[in-house]
Length: 263
Length: 264
Picture 1: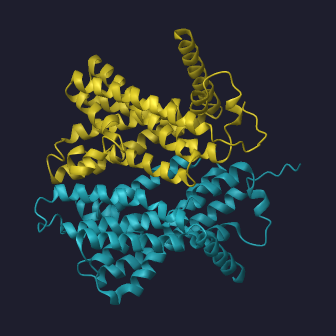
Picture 2: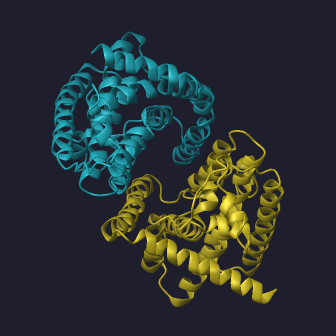
Picture 3: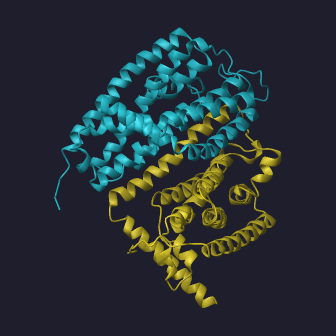
């Protein structure tokens, strides 16, 4: 365990060297939020009007917070590096190291996104406050519970993303599967809350990982309720376990396909 | 001069042909990249279906207009990334001193650089554009207009990519600046122009020329206007001239990375 804590610490120290790069990357994030601000302002002709239970202010905050989770926790390393390690054969050199490759990648990823997420959160909260004012119905007393839910959501997303990357053991390029996963997450979870979808589609979305990765955590921030918290927590426990087993299962199966030719 | 242009075009097409042949060595991956990119673009139909349920017109556009805008953005992006995908990787090539092998070639350096790679998934983008126009505006005339404005849009997009990419000759972290500006074009390209107002709208026709790449071409597809077409042709000429000017000015500042690499 000590070695993983050490890896986590060194990755954080490393990412502190690139803070300027992270801040310069804010432009795209701000731009997307700006586009949605304009879009929703156009659709909400009356700011007091409720659309599927959301006021304009809540809708903007929903998009800001889901985009913050998305931009702050996405990491090219678990998308491209795992695939590249498999494709290039570099994985043969890391599986005999005194750590588990998958755990190493999880810990490294958490170290890389910790600072990034914090910076994006600060930027998102500032932007939201300037554009639409404070988060309605937000109660700081729930912050510890929300942090717990956010960490679980990040882990589930990481496990699923890494599982897709591990498909490179069987197909050369897993990128197309990443595109589809990201787009499903984007359309069904980041851009719109579940309530915006037709009634028949809502139970499907609520039982998918989207519910626990984006919708659930953000819904708790903009309108906390004990019922939603319990249902999100329960669903997260199931998905956390399921996605971790899937990840480990794929790795165990895939690693058997490695051929070392020497040289 | 005409012969030189003809030869240069021939080299360009040969370069793209061999790029695609190289990508096709793994048929499954090649096809998957294309098919999944079509599906990837199609997922956004859900977004617009939902939004148009809330309001019948968004920024003056109806659902079919937005989907044609999407198709146009995809085909413009597709053409530029099939023929000139390296234009969008210029900062990386400049910062890592990887232009050496192009400098000793007898043909035009800029064209050789930007046509030296093809993005396979961009073929999927191009196909998606044509699927959309076939579904919503099927006629030979519309296909021709769509092709013409897509080519013009892709020329402006590529030239814009070269201009902002060449900033890396002068600026440290020019890669991030260029990436941000290109992503601005791509992000704005799929949303109706009418939702933006004032200075932002002006910016979309100047600093981030998405108006010239997508919005004006869409108006031509929906309702042909010769003046708008002339404006786009004029803009394409100006952007290309600027791209050559900025790239060659910047090239004077280029220093080799002394890397021994071979281009096959």
